[in-house]
Image (cartoon, rainbow, N blue to C red):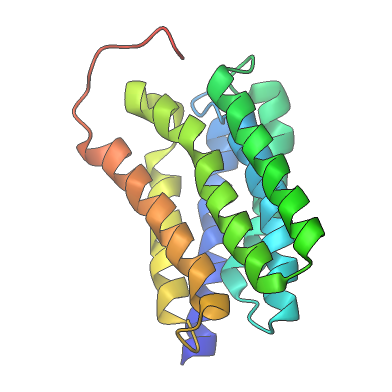
Length: 191
């Protein structure tokens, strides 16, 4: 059953990207370049760490393709420019990659990469905090459902098996709050 949930999580995440990409082309969704660059690079690194620990799941396998696609689309259709927060997220990601190369430890790689992945989400969290219309609610809801199935598909509650689904679930849950519950404050000049 856990394998079924893992595969289902990967299928659902791809289903979430279909409306996401559609809303990008429609100009309704403005993906943050730095977030999706960090996601694309780190999903690949996390996949490698999980592969070496024999802990690959459907969620991370699908995420690589989807995050890379959104990053390339964000170059043309995403939020223009790079903020200080975007640059901070990218520098943090680079530091994480350097640490992984220096220590050559798959578990350390997963921990650092997931920390950086979460930090790379911060520019999108801030963007959505000030203007939730920049992101597609349906897609993020589907991503949240995928994250739940990924958690249900964790074969063993070890760091290698559970860390990625847990961090993805945390990111999606924060997005759910920001998109559905977050009280609407004034628009900021930051974004």
